[in-house]
Length: 251
Ligand code: 13P
Image 1 (cartoon, rainbow, N blue to C red):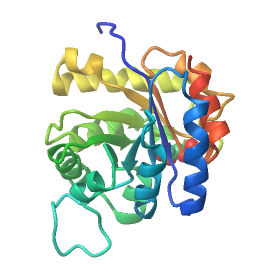
Image 2 (image 1 turned 180 degrees about the vertical axis):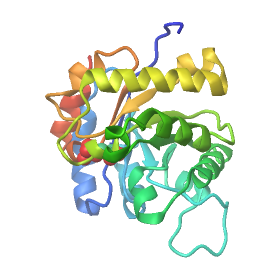
Image 3 (image 1 turned 120 degrees about the horizontal axis):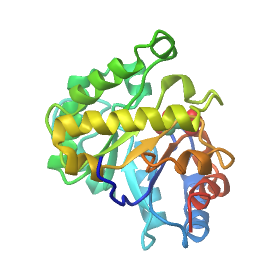
């Protein structure tokens, strides 16, 4: 596939962690630690922390995103958050289809596709997450599962979007994919993307790796040609760890 330079992207997914005072302290620290880093940085806090995080990062190049959204623009959906509400809270990104949403809330690829489309319609960029389970990888079905998740989640052809490959067996386990497995999978995903959206568009898409990324393993993963950045969970909670990951990928 044509080689093209893609701007590295680093997402910090805080999951269900932090309260406002902790978010404020984090936002005072992170910008200075990544000011000379290469690439784009986005923090994904819980909905209650979005206004605090957006205000705390205002004036810095660090963006803010939601962790999920409802596909409808508004309505009777208790406990959910709409794309418009995310924009109103200062977001420019949103995660769609994280494996913990698929696991905890039974999200299907069709729902992920609808969410990604709703995000784009409101001016947000969806970071669409896919990943196979340990059993699927061990039984040799990982690529087949990923191809199905990819085509299902992109069924509405959102544009723009970025992709995150997060093998479920690597999330929060300390078991990172080796750079070789991650590269092989990312290259496969880029080929599969080319079949869906055409080769030039696929060549320009950022594909992030996620799953137990830390300051020690980031550089060897990032050295692979189809790994364009990371979606970091646990290690993104600490500004010095998260910035060390980002800085290990170039400054
Ligand atoms: P960990 O980095 O904690 O493994 O989490 C990865 C993840 O799920 C990011 O979305």
